[in-house]
Length: 282
Length: 268
Image 1 (cartoon, each protein chain N blue to C red):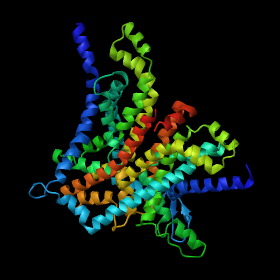
Image 2: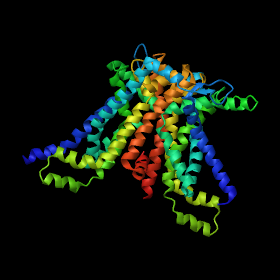
Image 3: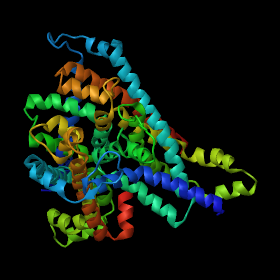
Image 4: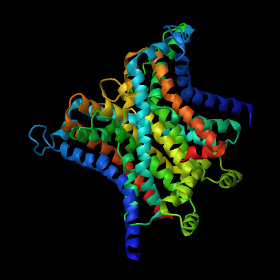
């Protein structure tokens, strides 16, 4: 009796995690491994080949798409971190009712469905949209030309990522002690010295973490470029969707998925390195 | 604060609020417009003409129904699959625990569109493309991170002594779970369920790739509406997509009270 009880206890946790783990195997491990193997096969003969990768790294159009995707993602990371940090600094160092309102304004957008946000911004910025109409009623013609352009995509990405970056950075700003800032100010440090000597050293790890997340979501973004992006160049997410859904070329689609995974693992590596260094310091 | 600084503060905030909320308010206004013609910034007349148009399109009503079906099924099965795993991770120290925990984070380590395509290739073989099962599976995968992380934290905070006391007076493991553990962790589970439900309601990419055109939800119908229909139809649909989020947030607000509600939101 005692023995079977022990045995039961030993296996109970495995029984509990099994359904969830099975789902991970079925929906992540198995598909990713299959994609990897498909990407290395010829579409017709199923023999080993690197052609599917070769195509994406030699074809002029596809190279343009890769460069465009990286440009949009990197610009989004830089601007979202910069503006998000400014927002976080504002919230952290102004303790009044206004800054509390700003926190609420920053938290809420995560509950707005992505499609609704993209569509709402499109209605404002497209040629003939709200901005054009305002200009027209003031008596001049103005076309923002933000649809089908990198600037428009980056702007929408910022809508999603500034609040996200701000909230992550705000969490790390909580570690900056008011006392250390005040004592620095007392011995004559100016604003910039406080920023570079006290605030940034305490928060820079969170910058890398937030940046890694923002990069990852934007490299693989689909909805915004599908609705707002042009046909040439295209973001890789849209290229992948078309490869899969319109051209039905699963081998190329698989290769592009793997390329996207590799691009994202760049940011995962940053994330891991930053976390490991943090462990060492302790 | 000096006057100049105060004005500057307000200006910066105004620009931020305008950038974040201006477009949403414009869409809200358009949902009740009857006539919205080119040079005019404001609609020429308001009313419900376009609402009649939307409710007359039967496939849009079907999409509305499908959305709630998918969200409900996803939330239910996600709880069924993830809560035991969360409990095991919170309560037991077993070999491979951190490996399992790590595996549950994996879905967020891949770009979504790449993962959906990889899953799509498998689903073709398994004949799950265009099926409700396929779409629900995608949604469970997407929301696993909430359903495992948030409840794990909550289960860890339930006092073990309380559970042991219940066992000592003769309650079985199931009874202990449902009378002691579950009620204490309930707020966190409700929040996780809220995120899962709203996440499934908003999910568009995976459903478009796996379910379209057989399983059409409000979110996937929105793609077509944005590309081909009048702004008013899109605005009404946008409002219908946002309303459940507002309603559920409001219910949670009532349920938790103001302070702990805001704390719960920051978990994410």
